[in-house]
Structures are given as structure tokens and as C-alpha cells.
Length: 443
Image: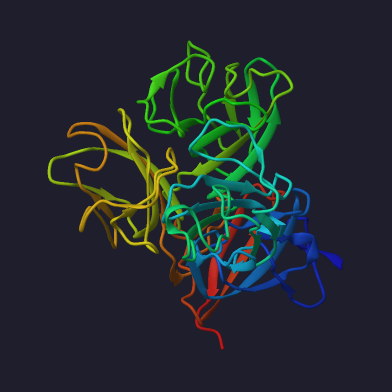
């Protein structure tokens, strides 16, 4: 590395050496002046370690276009048949290293929901259909979580099994299950745990944006599941996941009685209610789901008004999984595209899978339609959380906002298989960068 004068006393740094291949979304200017990448995601780049103000640095980024496959690295619905012994479920998600949640339900008989996340020790579970604390489920549970899926065992065909060869009214048949797996990932899903202090608390999260929906459960005591949704505008609004009760007002859950404690991109807030923080020394877990309006979003949380003849929700993309209910008295409903549009499971109930009838819930390329007889009544508010179906599109780069482009608009990202060169210059310590697409269609 050497410094040299370029004009009016400005010193510039010239870096010698090979091209640095980018492995993430950070471009570290102390590593050189030439970077390259082949896209397989939609990176939002940041520039770090620029020279001090008064020194200039020019650098280039060679970008080969690629494709981004939405959701398949974040979420999976897996249908499987129990065998009464051990079984490995492969879903392609690296929950072992990244963390996440596995939610299992037997489909054919009245059976609890089994939720195990990577903050728990193996052999334990939560159940959305009850207010029970975390339970020991040893012997018939998720026994291991790997970089590609999870392992199961089942020494019982009882109510708490996840891999039974028979069960309930279906004795003598192999039990059918569904597993929904959520990986911790920015702008998609996060898990946070804390210890209650008997008062309101501010809790950090790593979702990377303002949450769209937060589900909280005491893991040490029998308190209801508390749900905050971005469409709740009251100072104390919340709803319960394990009950059919309508949205309610209760000071000390997600508000302090005088104001709504609105989440931010780095924190959320709970009051001193026992369901969320009030039990001193009690343990709690929160599952946070993003609401992302970007073109590459994987998840959206929203609301709509129930209309006669069926309500259509425009998400901008086709979903594969939808959690939905009326904010009035109602069941919760889960629809997924692996089981089919008309088949539902109820998070607030241990009931077997039920059919709502042909056409009751339909997916389309921009959203979904739900018939008015499923949840609530005409005129009611429906709240939902929807996860995008897997689909591959050309990757797109988000450059730092500190970059000034000749036209005032960032240039397009190269299409899959093509290569472009972008050049940048900073002279003020990285406060401002001047960027330009220097070449297109390189060999």
C-alpha cells in the first residue's frame, strides 16, 4: 500500500494485491480497491473503514448477476408420516447454527401443538392450544436439530407424540403430521427470551426492522399467549393465541395504560402484566415476525375488512402459509399450500385438521381470498400474517444511501449470468461516495 498526491494536496491510497471476493454485505475498504461477487441474494451493502477525511480512495465492485430464491432458506412446511420409532426430517433449513422454531401438529386426531425452539433444551415443548408453561416431553419429541432439518423419536402413541405409528381414533394407521419450521433471519423471524422483573421492560431484538406481529408466552407459568399486531392502534390492545376471545384492552401487556409501547427496528416493549413480565424471576419467550414491504419481502402482517362473498387480500406475491382470524370472537386459522387451501388447523385448539369446503381459501399470484363464513362476520377486521411462496427472481442490490449517482438514481443490478463493474470514490472519510456503473456485459 502507498499514498500519493492527486490534486490540490489530496492524498489518495492505492492498494496493491488481488481482488477480494465478497462473502457478505460489508465492503471493507481496508482490504483493497477491487472487490467481486456473484449474487445469490439481495444484499444491502455497507462500506466500512474508508480513509480519513482529506484522503481519497477509489474502488471498484465487479458484480455477476444471480438469482434470489425467496423463503425456501427461511421457512418450510413438511408433511410426514409417523413410524413409532426414530425419523429424520429434512427441510433444508440450518436451524442448528442460525436458530429457529419448529411447530408440529398431528393432522388426523385431537392432538396438542408441539412447539420447540432453539432456545429450549431438547425434550421440552410449548403448546399454543393451552396456557401451560413449558413442558417436559422427553421420549416423544424432537431429539436433535441439524443444519438440514431435525430428528424425531416416539416411544408413545399418546397425545404428546410427534412420530407415532398410531393414535387416538386412528389406531392401527400411521399418524400424519405437519411441521412448520421458521429460521431466525433478518426481516423475517426472531426469537427473544428474558426474565420478568415485575414491571415494564424494553427488550432488544435482531429482526432488523419494525415487527409486524409479536407472540409472547411465559415459559415458567400458566399464563395466556399474548399477541401484538401492527394493526392494533389502541394504547393497550392485544389478543390471545390460545383463546377465541376478541381483541382486548389490558394495561401492562403491550402498553402501559396511557400509551401504546410501539416496537422499533431494534426493540420492543412489554408492560408489567404477568403474561409478559410481571412474574419476578419468571421466564418468557417472544416470537417476532417481520412486516416487510420491499419487493423481495418474505413476510407481511396486515389487516383487511371482511366483505360479503369473500375477501381478497393483495400482498404483491403468492403466499404459502397464512395465519388469520377476525379481531372479534373467533378461532385462529392456519392455511398452507402443502396441505391444500381448504384444510385448516387451529392454533387455539387441539382439534384434528378440518376442511372449510372447496374454494374456502384460495391462493393467487398476488395474495389470497378467504370466504366470509370462515372467521368473523361481514364488516369485521381480519388480521393476518402471510409468508411468501418460494420463487426465484433476479437478485437486486441496495447500495448505501451515502452514494451519489450521476442521475440521482442507482443503476440496475446485472441480470443473472451477466457481469457489470461499479466504481466509487470518497474524499470525505466516507460521508459521501460518488458512484457510477463503469461497464456492462463484461466477459
